[in-house]
Image (tube, rainbow, N blue to C red; front, side, top):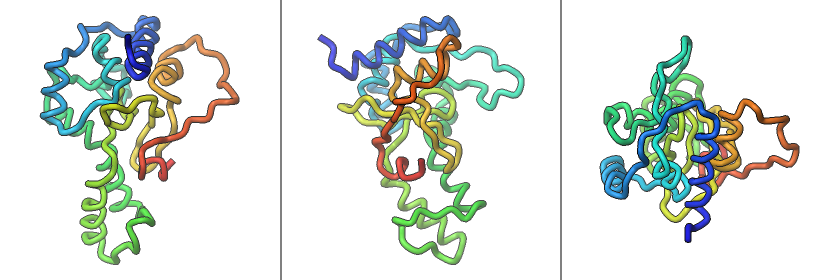
Amino acid sequence: MMNEGACLGAEAARRLAQTDLFEFEPGLTDAEFARIEREYGFQFADDHRAFLAAGLPVNVAPEDGQTWSKPWPEWRSGDPDSLRNQLGWPVEGVLLSIEHNRFWYQAWGERPADDAAALATARYCLEEVPVLVPVYAHRYVPAGQGSFGHPVLSIWQTDIIYYGEDLVDYMHREFDETRGDVDESWNPRATATFWRDLL
């Protein structure tokens, strides 16, 4: 019997497949998950793992003006540097906001007057924040085996918004063109420390 996280991931995959927007390769195997997690230093949340095990969405040719040429992370055979860049996007975005927009997270204490010192302090502090794993383009969920049901966050530097209550809701909101009006009771709650404070 599947646990709740695995059920959520399988349902998210089913919802995405119903849209007929993407082709799918066979899902990732246990050996592939082990290699990816070892190589990139994180563990997938249970629902994200089940989603990718059900079938691996294939990138299509980008449309004109599309920000991401390969929005689906290519976990099986993608360029390792591209995957590292996509994994590093949230932290790099915060660093850009510190460098160019004078952003500072209050819990880190007083911002150093020197910009280089501020960046060095931020880099050190950001090593402790929860790892976010890309789902699609700049949509992320927290890493963590044994966890599931995290809201999907859209991250652009320190501009962070909810894009789904969980993976199932996200697939509906991002890709289902037949969806109706937004449910008034929609009330996602971020689970990842630090990142939830930027919402």
